[in-house]
View 1 (cartoon, rainbow, N blue to C red):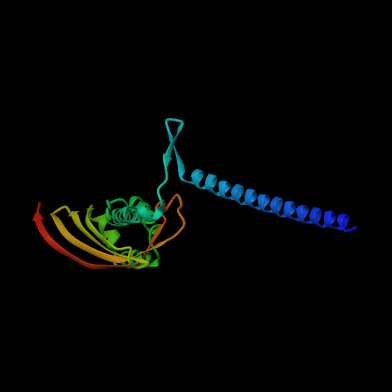
View 2 (cartoon, rainbow, N blue to C red):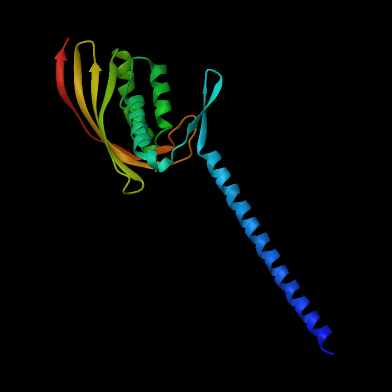
Length: 205
């Protein structure tokens, strides 16, 4: 008498269980597929290709955080070499300063304009003065952000009558910006200023 209802109830329970199993299996399969997709994207992004003699060579890309000190110091050194290495050539000076200003904010531009107004670059050209800089060391920290730094360098200035060696100490902070052709490291120097710039040795020619 009650056999049919019991069979219907059992069949319904089995069907419900089967449906739940199918839904769970579909969910797990979807989650696994998404996970695999993320893994694949991560593996692709961890590779870079370097063009050498027309051939693409695969190389491993490192996390930016691992390279911050190295890239930051090179960025700082490059800026100082561009800004302070000068020859008695007006176009050459403007070209180097222009490249340097891509690596820093208005603090560097203000320093350039101040030197221009004082006739510094005009004196370089008219006096046939050559100026070179060698970066001795860079103190840099990633503890704080923007990253503070201090650059220690030596200037070698050659005039028609003398050769001057000067110590140069500057400081500022670095913040992250997008990489570009003009700024390959993706940093921007801010609050840049000269802390010390004095003669160390003067040799008459």
